[in-house]
Length: 568
Image (tube, rainbow, N blue to C red; front, side, top):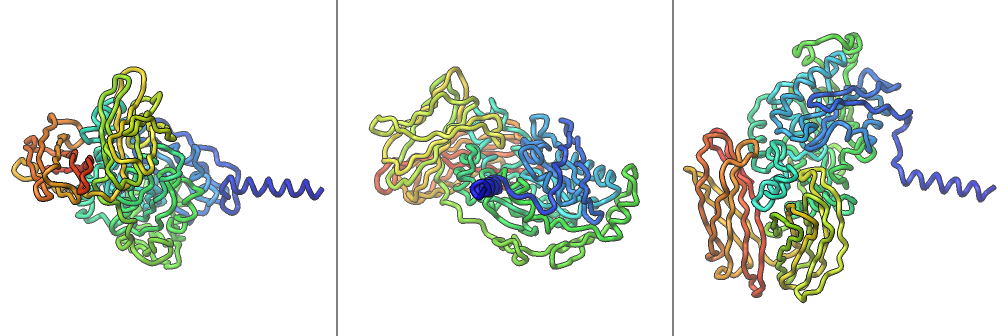
């Protein structure tokens, strides 16, 4: 009998370790909503049995290339909200069509639906929980399209408030073949380029309504060991720019003027998973005051309230500060590390980035087998390789300088983020010997590929500075640790309109390094309209120790309708 009890106890302990514990007073599983697969379609979640009238409605907004069901299929976020007594709503944005739109088009659509959802719930204000680009769309809806009277606060989960370098990569000269086949160049992806997001930030910051609704942010810094190849690729690539969750850096996940709840050990998917983060941001949701709750209860679901009536609702913070929020709220500050009341996110700092100049990128068309050279200098600790293709490879071959095949573990998976529809084949080389390596992607038939290599090395550093004036793009490259007389750089500039569509053939320019610097200029198309330029700089040189060295820099520059330029 004792043995049986011990087995039962062991089974219970094993189950509790395998599955996260639900909140106290867990209820029966809520029936998943059904959201029609059209832009703007939304569905209410099931009414929880422990519904409290002083709790706001939670609207969940998805991110790039995603859809409403990510909150309740293979995700317990909806269940957590239901168990905690919240009314919920889930919405599909333009991504559901297969062509993600920018934050302006998404924001306009979302603004109309925010008003509709608030009215559906009797004029209750809404708290928006937004993942990834959904947070950018939300800010556009509140500020540019005047949806702020219906929203009490916003919680963003790994939102790229400052863009993502992966979006810059998607528009680089080397990614063109692959982007054409998998459709990774869309208005939505284009709008997440780091330069465009600088423009967006400037547009938001100068709007008088920018602080009408408080924002709270969370971000992840665990991409390694996530079990997802696209996050391994994204995490390794973005590690050059700082800590990240596989898609968004922790620095980009923080919004100026917002309150940082926490940076935690999440990847881009687990940060939006209920059992990982709901209990951490729950206290920041806030509650409806008694008067507002009574008024909302008294209004039937078919009633319609004016924006003026809704904007008079007052919400009270559920944290210990007890602050009352009106039209211009003042949010409590939160410590960046612990999530307790303390420092503002403006004072929080992400992990330091690796020195720039540690990327090598190549890509093109494949007619079965494609091969790329990989130059390794002395002092390289490791290289993370990713061969991205429009269909799975039959084999990824890595040949050392001595001609021998290397036996390496290859991680493969399909991407569902920036390069949605592409396939990743990832391998890691530890302590690679110096010399010329070969990487081959073997497949049947024609296709396209993009190879990225992330070096862990302190051999050299390089940075690119740009300026634009009188229809000319000026570029200045600075390097450290390379022999000037043996180093050259090839600049390739791709030109796009404001929606990310190509508007002119690329231009190229090649220069030699002089005293650690090189400068060049290229003419830009005279469009008179918003446009973006993505500069791919391929550096070929020799280190101070006399070893061959090759790297790639990618930088985007956005030009608004007034000719003002934006870039990192």
